[in-house]
Image (cartoon, rainbow, N blue to C red; front, top):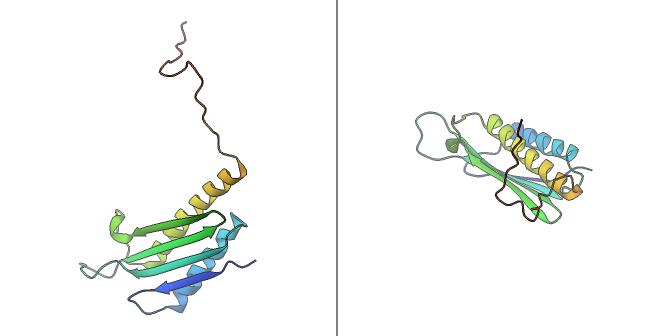
Length: 129
């Protein structure tokens, strides 16, 4: 089943190559969850004041039952800003994939639940030799 993908380009012209790249990344998310209801991606320049070429912001929202997974990071917030929108898109979809994997683990109950045992607060076991 193909994930419905909505792509928005703000303050820049739409690129069919970028659109195809985003759709490819979005469809790959289906490997990690069959519960994806939709995906919305916004691509925009990071700002007007820059020293060299444009850096890009990418916002991704993946809708799953009971939750919206949101990934948003601009290139200026990263240690190295990227003038390549394909790099920013790849990094954002990697982050979305990790969050989607966490969601699926929690949904399946694969996440350990730490329970506090009565009488164990603040104590540490010491082994004596």
